[in-house]
Image 1: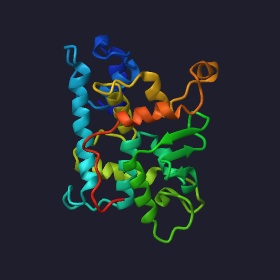
Image 2: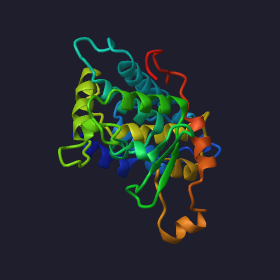
Image 3: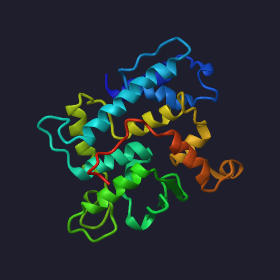
Amino acid sequence: MTLRARRLGTLVTAPPIHEGVLQRPVDRADFDACFTIFPWLDRATEDDVLTNECRKLEQMFQTWWHALNTTTAIPNMDIPEDFSCFMRLYIVTIQRPCEIARMDARQLNLERGLWRVPQGIKGGRHIIPLSPIAVSLIRRAIAIREGFDSGAVFPACRNAKGETSVDVMVRRFRQVATALSSTDLRLHDIRHAGRVLLQDRPMRVPVEAAARALGHRKKGIEEIYAGGGDRLHEKRKVFQAWKPAWATLPETTG
């Protein structure tokens, strides 16, 4: 059975979610999708189902971070440094890979730790507070752009016409995923996993706050009544919660 078939089948037959797990409601769609994206998770019946299974997602993140953070983590594989920066930035910001691929120095205020996405996929501007680790990764990515004079932070994602494509990062991702025995994992699945972990204990980030931090926007009148705006203070709290102990950088990166 293909991953897509597992995804659709599980979404249709998913058992009830234990609402008592969190103090705030869980986004059922994200939770169900988590089990279809990561088929090695087990659906438990006890009240701490989210915590148990999210612990496995944490282990998956740690494995990837270690592989990207240490040049010798995967034998006989030379991971390009720009890809390593791209993926670790993806993990610590949980933003869309295509938006990271389009990142331009003119969108950044690294002194204030801000990244302004000019036009997100869901429409409207999206300002992202950057953690010190994210700022360090961006500075490193800019520093290693040899002979590239445009504002692109990840020039490998630009073609000769200046158009952006994440394809090169997807190919590199598949190579590393294969080496880590995660052949079913897709690049976008990292974002899904991060969204689920934000709502697990001890973070307990409210569904709406997590959605805004990740650029999931409401439409029309719903956005107006939800408050609209950049909600920077709220987003900073979300990314302060998303601060894994294992997400550290080597002393040579920064």
